[in-house]
Image (cartoon, rainbow, N blue to C red; front, side, top):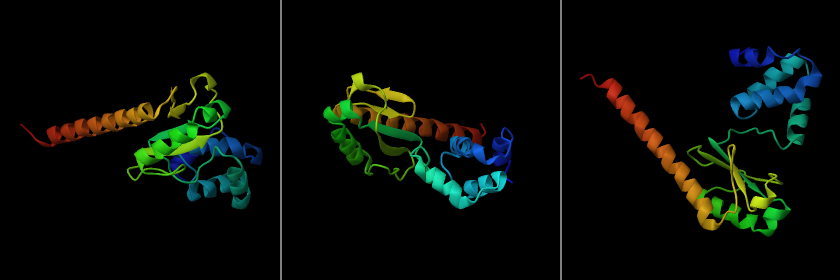
Length: 170
């Protein structure tokens, strides 16, 4: 067994009634539920993989593919819907060149629609990782994405400079 799984499993008893919590912890650690993860959970709690897949596919919270560094959730609840959340989603799809539910080629962003984020007074709203952005317009949602992309480029440039500096001895 992989050390990562041992670490996760160490807080559980290995009982079948722990399945959902195990799925949540594994996804929290790895970002998604891989085939290997399902195999390890199956062995640990002695439950068939088919049952684990049945449970994991029932709940929208579980993913079977890696997500981007930034998970964008666009609210499509009633308040956001009437404030044109669909337009926000379409603008993000065009800006990121992906469809709802997909991840950008650089693995930076994953776009998803959700039923409600509980921020109705901020409609339309999106959440990126743990930060909410409300009263969105087509311009403001593109601006947020551009700022994140620029921040990522700057961090990469600094990391490359650090690497160059460390490899050159003066």
